[in-house]
Image 1 (spheres, rainbow, N blue to C red):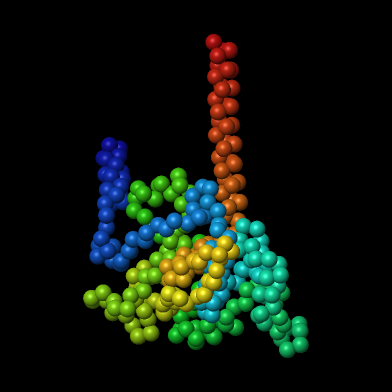
Image 2 (image 1 turned 180 degrees about the horizontal axis):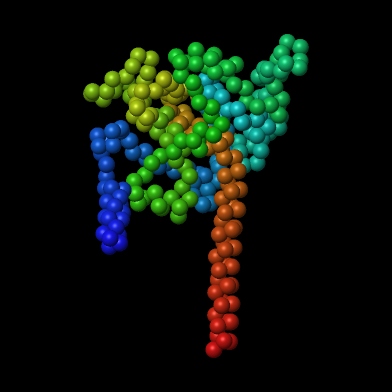
Length: 284
């Protein structure tokens, strides 16, 4: 009886491993899971850091394109001046905050000019207003969207993520999504009225119209006098990087702390090994 049960368990384990390692087509899985290409990000890897100028450009895209529909309730104006982020000056942040009216029941008129300590103002007063303006769909909050979205990888390739410290699945997905619109859906795919076909969106029918197009945002000249391509691809990269910072502003500090801990553990293990060798050598 024990032998039979053991054979059954090993058989189930072998079948499970075979299913994980064998490719599954979209038809077999019941839904399409398009492959998303990994992008090169400055904050990727163990020693990655955010690019300050890219974060500033990404904020510009967010402010001029995304913020008309999407909120960022956990982002405060003052965060934009913190080290490791876009690092706008305090004067720039104060001037930016003053451009917005913040609801405040404690002042006459119920609203006042924003200050650096205020949170980023939501584009709609409530969920009902947001849905009414977007055909019944609720635009997601962008505070942690880069951590709430990710990509999938087949076994065993995802194991390498533990070695490379891959955590850029959210930005990879957002970059692909923003560029994944197609005017004509593939043959046999029907998109409801008011929806748009997107190759990477689950179900492919997305309520958000294509938000980016070449030349939509004027970057101007960079600090060094060079110009940055004003293309949909560049906009998608920049705003995805910015939203990654919004979701995890202390990413670089976390990586530095993690590397220090791993280095300490490695050295500590070496010292303990030498101590063990010394103790056992004296025992003989």
